[in-house]
Image (cartoon, rainbow, N blue to C red; front, side, top):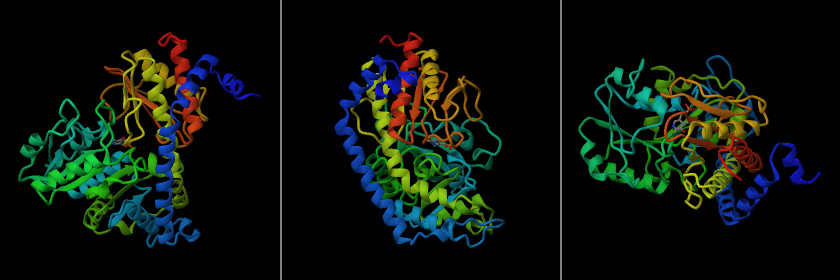
Length: 426
Ligand SMILES: *Cc1c(COP(=O)(O)O)cnc(C)c1O
């Protein structure tokens, strides 16, 4: 059977495929650049594993308290070396990205301290962590206040506003690299470095934390290379490489990591407790694969941007912009577009391709959200996935793809569904 017939068998019309192939052939140079970054980051990961003499004894799991878990300790050192930090906390007990961020914040803030976001509103689930929306157990309930300085309309930092917002109480600055569910630009590592230098210039002892979700291995450097005291993320996104079944990481200064560890576990116990059960091998192997997996996801994001830009939909980033995370936003302007897109992504999945996603009220979000994820790991968004909050401007956020070929199929299928729904004429 020819390739075209394989696509046809999966439900992709000849017209959609031809259009996709035409777009793909215009992206050769971009894809080459992505492959070169992946090569660089692959070597970075291998060097860290070799330096720490990773061996199959590290793949064994511990149980119970998990004292002296050699694999866990070695994995944490490998993360620290990749991020060029003094230390790292990498655990299956960190249940997700929000939990990792909460742990880093709550561990390093004390009552009376103020948290500052100089890059606008943080990711939706952080609103309840911080207490922007009233929530049981928020930082606000513990007497930690919050301030926010929005980006200027052109996406640049409001340096005057930030200077004015830093006061006696300001203890920690949280910088979200990725756009999350907003349509602002994602921050490059270079820009994050400029922001960190600026705030530390005003108050040198500020702790700078970067929410690094979706950013790992997209560039050759990470925010910890440009002055961040902590970088934080989820293992069911980029650094887990699709194999990590659970987990989060915090990499940073010895002091910040120690404080986070006492919050994750308990005062007195800290990082000494926390059995790795059987997941060490998946966390090591996923990390090893992460640079190439991220490259596939990036190609998918760029492919989607170019497809939908050509069809006249607003896309962020646009088809030619440089990339600093793996997320692609496409604005459809109406709920039906978001729904058809997500249903296409679902229909292209290796798992649960036969189910039809619908919008629902997800915990932690302030509007109904539709999510497409035919994933091996529940909710994993390094796997091909899309989600769209059902609220204006009706944008869909698309990310992941463990392989470029799957990402390509998913995007073609989204276009197929939009065509069938009459939202795209083609
Ligand atoms: C995904 C994400 C989070 C939260 O991670 P979860 O694993 O979904 O809890 C936080 N910040 C950003 C920017 C994210 O993309």
